[in-house]
Length: 246
Image (cartoon, rainbow, N blue to C red; front, side, top):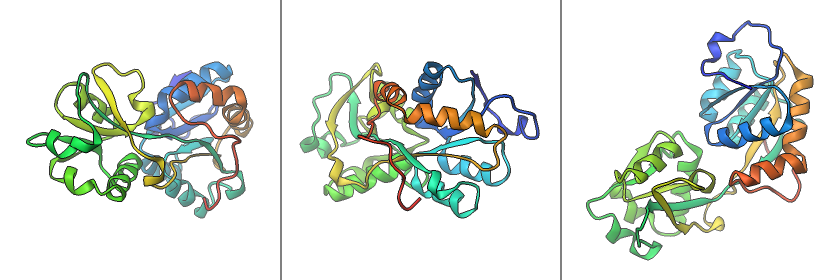
């Protein structure tokens, strides 16, 4: 499998394998799933909105995985993705993390953040930040953490800030916290406190390898593919279903 860092290098190039563009938070899980599938694929990971814009501008893509339903809907509206082909691939959970050994709880947030930093991906640009802010507002905790909030680039940056002691607390996806050294999950945020987290997958109409994309998508939504994603900390659904409203 080849990881592609810059889509512009591939623009106009002949492609022997399907090109998968996917949300950065799915990278490790999708790499593992692709390896398990035995299907050769090109991959590029980044912010869902940025990838959707690149696809809209003609970047080569056969399959798109979005962490934000808004951007999948954007491509449907642009005629680059068939609405009926969009599926919910998986879900996730939100967790509050702290440096290893921390005794902080949801009840001691304000005290723990006095003079400290609360790290979370920027709600204006990152789905996890938007979900996180919605959850904290719903739980009546946003006013407590807002004075200490420092927006991060993504969940990986949030995990690093907490692990290195640069932030006393952070909010991330559970999949990004799983198995990471230097941090501890101190609270699993209630799922009913925020909109459902849904990662959507769909083939892209402008792709060069629709057969390869179809085979890879079929594996990802199969029981075998879902098992790989679950092992990487994602929440799989009872049955992968059409994504309503995409």
